[in-house]
Structures are given as C-alpha cells and as structure tokens.
Image (cartoon, rainbow, N blue to C red; front, top):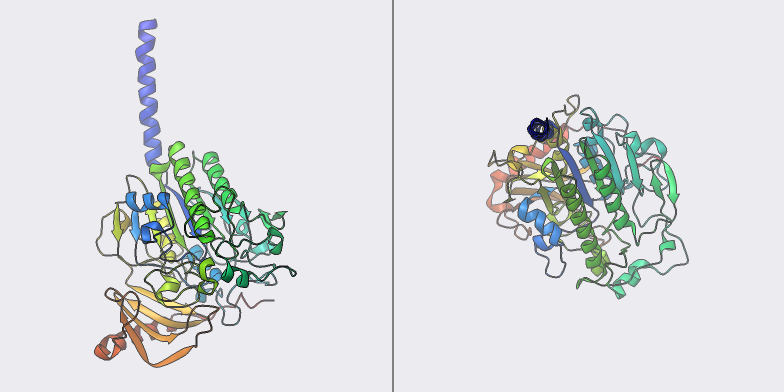
Length: 469
C-alpha cells in the first residue's frame, strides 16, 4: 500500500500545483497605485536627480516602463485626484474652480456620488479595495472613500498643511532659511481617519509615510487570494515636510530628499510584499504624482528638471509627471515616449480586469495596455488638454503645444496673460518651452485652436463642488 500511496500523493501534489497555477492565471490582476503629492519631474534618480537616491523606483524603471510624457488632469491637488479617480477631466464633474482651487476643511462639497471611481468599477469584478493616504475629494462622511467603492480607508482627508494653528513659526520663512527645517507636529491639526472615524489628531506626520506603507503591506497579505486594488496616496512631499528618524538626515538633498527617499523605501517594501506573497507576477504597480513641485518653497519644494514652471501652472513642469509602470513578466521593459495620463488608469484597469468602464458619460481616458505589453508602437492618446481654474489654457497634439493663456506657478505671483496670438512650442525638440515658433507654423496654430474650441464645446456645465461652503 505504501508504494502505491506515494505515487498517488505525488500525482495529487502535481495536480494541485497545476490547478493552482491555472487558477492564478485565470484570476484578475491586482492594481497598486502609489500617488505622490507635489513631486517634481526631476526628483527621482531614474529621472535624473543627482543627489536623491531612489533605488526601488530605479528598479521599477529598469524592470518596467518609464513614461516620459505622462500627464495629470490638473496642476493642483483636488482636481488632479478627481481626474485620476474618475477617468474624467475635473471640469466635467464640478471638481475644479476659479475661486477655490482645492477643497478646504470648511468645504461642503466633494466628489459627486454620480461619478464612477476606479474602485467602484473594479468592485463589479469582485475586487477588494483600499484607499490609504491623502484623499482630498471631500472630508464630510458622504464624500469619504468608503462612499466611493473602497472597502476601507486609512489616511488624512485633505492637505497636510491645512488646519494650521497659530503661535508657531512661519513655515515658509523658516523653510527659506533652512533646507532641513521640520516643524512641530502640533502646528497642523490634520485628522487621521480610519474609514469614517477620526483616530488621531493631529496626525503624527513624522511617521505617516511609514504607516501608510505598512497599511498597504498589510492589505496585500490579507487579500493575496483575491484580486485587489490599492490606492496609496502619500501626502508628501507636499509641505510641511516630515521624515521619520530612520530617514532624516540621510539624503544629500536635505529634508526634501529624506522625504522622497522614504517614499522610495516604501515602494521597495510594497514590491517585496508582492513578491513574498507570490502575487508580483499578477500585479500592475503604478507610481506617479498629482502635480509638479511647489516652487516658492525653495529647497522644501521639488524640481521640475528641464521642464518649465511647477505646481499650479499649465506649463510642462506643472502637469507632466515622473511615471513608472511595473509588472514582472508582463510589462515590457522600456522607456515609453508615447502620451499617457492619469485619466487612462481607469479604462486600462477595467480592460485588464475584464469589467465595463462607464459608457453613459464622456470619458477622457484610454486603454494603455497595448503599449504596456508591447503590442503597439503608437498609443491611443494624441492629445492633452491643460485646464486651470475652469479655463482651457493650452492644448497638446502630438509634439505640438499651443498656449492660449499663460500663468506661472502658484505662490510666485506671475501675471496671467491671455494671448491674442497663441504661443506654440514643439515639445519633442523643446521640452523646456523656451522657443515660441508660432510665427513659423501658422497652420499648426490654426489646427490646435480649432481642436481647443471643439473640446471646450464638449464640456457641459456641472455644479461646482469646490465652492460649496
């Protein structure tokens, strides 16, 4: 009997392995999005920074894809996050304002319940969903992530510089004096929320990056047997800057570098967790940021590298972000120069998960999976629309970009200029937008002007959420 039992046992083991592999192959892929706040195009080692070490993000770039022409839907927090979450430009759903650029602690509005988020779309495919970190799409109970398709939420509801208390040193003044200045925790009375309950106030921002990462790692371990979606939105390197003891003073770039290096370490922990639990080869990991660097804060702000301007502007430094895609064995390693945008994540995830993307409204995203898998050389996206304060400031088509209105980074006070004759730049040969070539290419200016007018006509009025008080 023993001699017969052993072959039967071996066959059972082999069959179990084969069946397990088949089930894994059939299972929908996991998605993890790591979304930074105010990270500049030039702030990562793999995007050219000389003194910030980002070995784990560099690994993502080496083993996956580095996208050099990837954009956000707006150049400031709230509207940018709405664009990522819904696959729609924020001007379409009332999440952009000329009077209040973002949501504040006294705001009454938030992401409308009629919008379909990535989490809600994936829930139809049986996904476990978690939102971790900065939300900034409405802090009232009816607007929190658990009302928008997420099974759980653990994070802060708006920017980490809000709820500021009096009696503390002026942060900007101190930052201009000292690249290593870190304020007291009590200066910012920002709440930390678990689902809908405040569990810590003020949030200890010295340890918040580490704890966000830990929550993501815990979620991976708890949900490895089912498809999952994690939206990890760091509230840093938005000012005020905080770093944990393990990372403070370690970067040659000062406190800002410490912060970015701690975020990088967290990405490494997430990659390790995916590998440890055997789901790395079934997970698409995406890393990007909500907008460009907040330049007025000098060394406490980041760098847009060779790009012009930063946060708040519709120049490239405000809306083109350092972006990485990593999926071992699936995403073809390369530097991808085709156009992409955060609005493309929803339709891409839906296509990969085999669920329907919203079809009853105007969508602004495209399925990028053919590019990710090396099945196409040309991407589906050929246009980028640059909105600011409910106005279309610029449009890009292919390598050409026309500016109809220009205005600089938030906080610098640069003048808003409405151009009688649009400025024109060729972004392939002039990514820094230094050389206006409109006079040499009037036919391109005319074509882009017509494109802009047609696009504006497609935007229907929506109730403004940011102005509700």
